[in-house]
Amino acid sequence: MDSGLTLLIVDDSATMRAMVKRAASLSGVALGTILEAANGQEALDVLGRTHVDAVFTDINMPVMTGVELLKRMASEAKWSHVLRVIISTDASDVRRQEVSDLNVRLYVQKPVRPEAVCDVLSQLVAN
Amino acid sequence: MSSLNSSPIEQHPADHGEATIVDAFVRVAEVSYCAYAEPCDATRLAELGEAWLETGGAPTEWLRVALHFSGDCFGHMVLHLPLDVARDLVSAFMGLMPDEELAGEVIHDAIGEFGNMVCGAWLTEAATRLNFALKPPQVTHEGAGWSPVDALAADDGEGTAYAMAINERPALLRVRLEALL
Image (cartoon, rainbow over all chains, first blue to last red; front, side):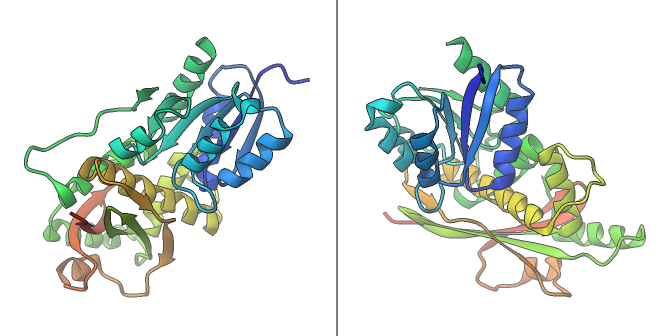
């Protein structure tokens, strides 16, 4: 049985998901399963069937955006425990304001170094 | 909610709007793709292409990355990169060895993400108080004979052009940004 953090990575770029997954795996943080989703709707499907501890999500994605995903998560008490991190190229004032009351723990602007992903995980675990 | 950025975006006092695309390109190349990039002029752009051929490089195949955005501001960014540069960037991005084989769809996805990051970083800086939505990047192969020097000089409606050097190879950025006031 996994005892580490179950992480869900949400991004429409498969290579971006692979980079974040690789960086997370090398972070030294105890990780259980690392799951992936290509958009907000797929992420909700994963959340509906699997216990997830943390979500790293992009903003601009087809089908369902990261903001829409976070709004759906905020509306459901069953996901109140999930740590939420945004990793997105869009770090505009407008977007930050839009997500300010959606329980986002960290907002990371792309481009990111793999080390930044490690730092994010370490911060989440420490807090 | 706190923020975590890898490094601050450089700002030039006179750069506003479209010109900040150069800073975004340089930053994305360095931070996520371990590449050295800098702006250049048409002469340098031509020299980079010729130097490649003189050292035995094959005629350059070009990738075209297009991103459109809409909202309070709208427009597009078009980026041309040599395919060999794209392969190197993708390898660096994914932490692979330089000679590892890469499937075409992997290159397209990762270079699309490169364009996505450049465009997003640019708009975050140039239009931070405006609402914008980036559409997914479109990556295609440019036709044979495409020349960045010719494209730099052409008035083809793609927008303001910026010649770039990335890892000592030529690249071309073109952008158009309009805002609803």
